[in-house]
Length: 399
Picture: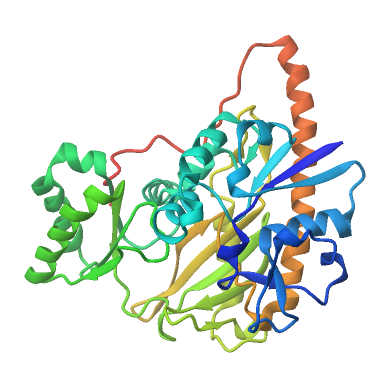
């Protein structure tokens, strides 16, 4: 029997807007009651829904029905090395290390204490997908922006510095570097955000004026005590919030595109005209661009050396810089909101769930096969293949 584990986020958290309304779908009726969230209003397809990670597991169990394969739903409080090792492969879909830390600190009292346990368990178990090294690289904005720059993946002009480097260089030395970055042609005003930040917490713009620079200096003093590092990027006026400068969240399973949505700070969601929505977006060009870029992202290599396909990736894309077409990646994530509550894309979202479930089965099969092959190979050699995710980086303050 092959066992797939899925580390879940708490259903009470997802009830605030990331539920998949499913009471009209036969294959969801076998989902255990503890994973079903009821609501009085707001769901078009009934009064209850399930979270995305549960939907993927339910699709495997009740639609695909792979022979000799079972799904283990693991609630946040139940994560442990022993539980993870009882499965063949465990997937993180929505709830990983960043979510465990953020939810425990700022959002939900019932999530407190989860981060330290999650970190300990994920580092101890060697059968978690994606592996911890990959999670930590992608979770850290500093790490993945530097990775993108070094691998010719288009991003906005970016300055990134870890708190450790800030402390070694000193405040004045750091700000000299930041102001040099701001002074370069075409950068001007900037937008700063913390490493490992979520939901726009402690992120804000700064003008390229004397007052703006003083404010940015104060921001650095305060935020470097609070966060593991800071990122400063060229500011695009109205980015993500206006028709003149939108952001498109593009969803992939493996290397295959599924759908896109756009959402502004007022939670107004739309999708591209090419997919029946109202957003003017050069979708064909952006798809071609992101399909090239996604192949440059770090490979997923398990601790035993097994190289596996991607599950889900969300590429958050901008494409208008000062009125010109200039595509760039704002974020690239493996754990994210999928806008399941946005009703106009429901058919696309159903395709997303089914594709993700099939990819989970595919990844697990390949992992099991490679694990057997690597074990056989290991009998003849003591050589250990170590995961390798990125080129050797220069200073993290590279701009």
